[in-house]
Amino acid sequence: MPELPEIETIRAGLTPHLLGRTIQNLSIHTPKLRWPIPIDTLRQNLVGQTIHTLHRRGKYLLWSMDAGHQLIHLGMSGQLLIQNPATPATRHDHVIWTFDDGTRLLLRDPRRFGALLWIEGDWRHHPLLAKLGPEPLEPTFHADHLAAWCRGRRVAIKSLIMQGAVVVGVGNIYANEALFLAGVHPARPAGSLKPDECIRLTRTIKQVLEAAIRQGGTTLRDYRQSDGKPGYFSIELNVYGRTGETCPICATPIRSQRLGQRSAFFCPRCQPESSQS
Image 1 (tube, one colour):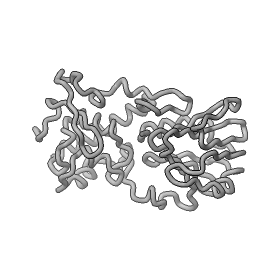
Image 2: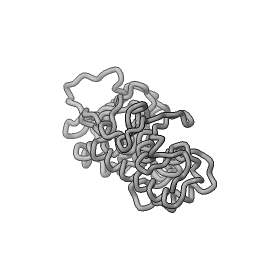
Image 3: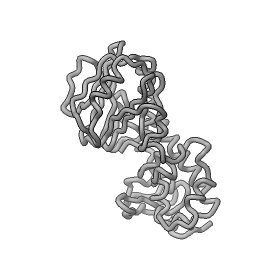
Image 4: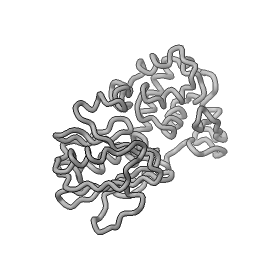
């Protein structure tokens, strides 16, 4: 599933193509993705509108125009791709925007778990966005904030930092990598983290996400940047998906276990199950 680094990469890649452009045509080939697409509302509000800003909030991409905001979520397999107008659409190309300069953008989503919605007024009050936590790369995400969420909690720390109410955009890959760099076992109860561990973990979350953005995100299966290229952060992964391989720090075999519905990857030596600090 595209997470914060992937959506930020897509936002940055689309900005020079779409910012200041006017939507000339909107073709919707599939009436429903995760939720029904408001086809009539989108056509009435989007066509003829000029895009003033492209934002990202967590894993959501928003285009802001005079009439309102278009919200896009890519689900598990969604892609936003700039394409040559002469290229024929595929059966998974559900939405196509055409702009005043001839640019064509398509939403491709084989699994159809993405979303395309319309927001009027302040987008921050939309039900999908209103309860989201701080952006991890902004000053509002800091060690004291994390420590407050950890205090007295028995939930595994990996599960906690993947909760959007705590901090947005820390998906499974990046949670595993940040915990490894912080030396924190993913299954440790959040309430067991000490202040210095919260400091390390907030720092490594920022470090991992910034590195992933520089590499254009992580491509393991479906994700592509807006120009069709994969993300290259996969070559820098220390533990994620590397069960049985050697730890890059101590050469101990990496292990994995199920936490909730997701896999956790860790080095048993570098990330002891109990606090060593």
